[in-house]
Image (tube, rainbow, N blue to C red):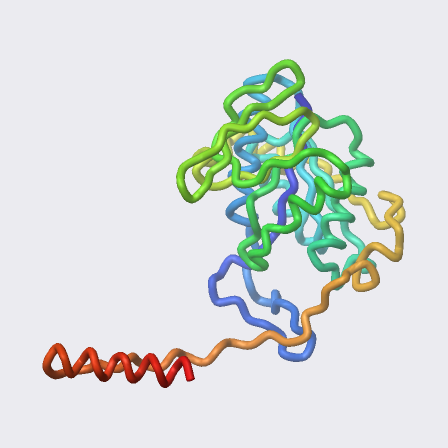
Length: 260
């Protein structure tokens, strides 16, 4: 069982600040961590390796400092790590990012399952995982809360829904995006931390993964961030007092004014 886990390094804060000129995240002076949802993907990948054997390769697209997140993933049980980093990737939207990661996955080669967190805490789009599956032309299942079994080259999984969950079967290879209900991530072991300290992280640029220059970075991004702003606070509601009939009449009038 060869598993690939895609992770992202994100700011370790809920107070995300945006550069008003470039409309990008201000990362200077902000601690970075593994995207919380990706931690569940890492744990599930390691559990699959423990159940079925094989290895877990973790991949991240980002700046050079994202190597720290990859080494942390190794301390948690992943076997190999790849950092896809190049200034040519700057400005990538979710489509260009998923294309870049798919190129790196093709270079890694043999895989059975690709795991991603359901979304990143800084972007909240939940689009990169499905985008990767589209570029690779493999089936996907999103919001997976449990991997029931893998046999006969098929995976049976539970996909969380608002009403409960669906039980789905998909052929391998496939891509799964996972939710936090799937497991409880482990803490790194001493052995894992020692392994991570000496681990060599492969570093690939756009040429290494044979990415089409027109499909990466700003050139490969069909969407642009034009403006980011904080919406004004909502005004307080109005309390209508009086007799029931009077309240009803005033409420009806207010509704009419809104509709008109």
